[in-house]
Length: 126
Image (cartoon, rainbow, N blue to C red; front, side, top):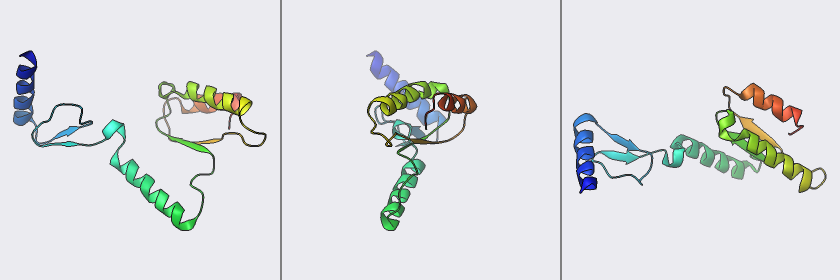
């Protein structure tokens, strides 16, 4: 009973106060005039750019990136950079064959960029 009342209030409120509802996931209830965008936080613009880059690479036969992995995002410690450093360091020490170290390109900027960059250099990580 409480769920149906809440659902009705949500529908009424969104119909009265919004022109369009942009949902981040289809896991939430349906609304009139709603679309789903940024599923799991990935904007269609990023997905389209990745598809375009993939087509360009296939057409030209060139490599996608200069290193073995890349990360795009806001550079803050909360995004998991300390865990990333740990995993890359462990891989390079234990599993990589000589001369086959995992290297990364990091694209982006953020409040902790200089600190993260300094810590990568201090730990001698590529």
